[in-house]
Structure formats: C-alpha cells, structure tokens
Image (cartoon, rainbow, N blue to C red; front, top):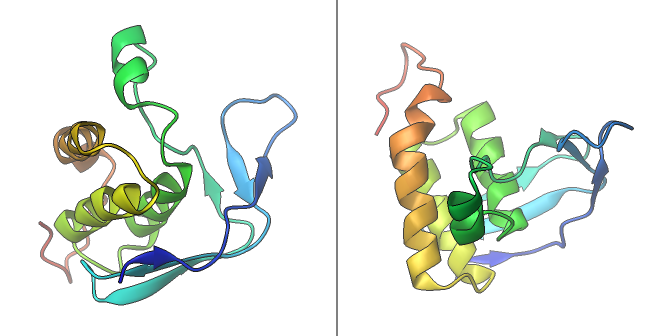
Amino acid sequence: MSAFLTDLQMENATPRDDGLWRLMAPLIYQSDVAGQTFTVPTGFLTDLASVPRIPIAYLLAGGTSNEASVVHDFLYSTQPVTRAIADAVLREASAVTGVPAWRRWLMWAGVRVGGRFHWIDTPSRIHG
C-alpha cells in the first residue's frame, strides 16, 4: 500500500522567504504506482507545487499536498522513473495525503501539460 513512511520536515531555504524550502530530514515514500520506495534526502531543495500565482489557479490547486510535491520535485530532479510515472506518483501521493479526487486530477493535468518544460531529457531514457 502506498504510504509516506516519514513526516515532512522542512524550513525556508533562504532568509528572503522566496518560496524555496530545504528538507531537514529524509522524506520516504513507498509508491505502488512506481513499484518502489523513494527517499528524498535531507538538504533537498524544493519550491513545492509550482502552481502559477494566478488567483483562480492557486485557489484550486496551490498549497496542497506538500509531501507529494516534494516527492514529485525529487523525481523530476533525479529521473529514476519516466515522466509519466513521476506524474502518476504525484497523483497517487496526493491521494495518500487526502487531497480530493477533483484537485488531484487538476494537479496531474497541470504537470502533464506544463511539466514537459521542466523535464530534462536524457538520451538513455524514453520518457512518458
């Protein structure tokens, strides 16, 4: 069963409070979708959910499931799985943290559309 095995512990990464966060302890997530467990290491930097600050978009999908957002950022940074699986893990992990289905779908659709600009292709992998 998919689950977070540790709690999210983070702090502002800069004194300017510019939306960048640093993990203070590892965040461990067991994913059924990916068939593996991911450990986001202490010190990892994240901006959480990169939702545009357009009021309606942020109201609908921003500020939810920080844990899932950290795992998703980690997967995009390290690419241990395809992009399609990384995005599916975001939706799965959001469900684990209690995000309603309609909001999970919006978050997933957003990363499927906009995430391709943040995914760095590597020649050794076929991405989703």
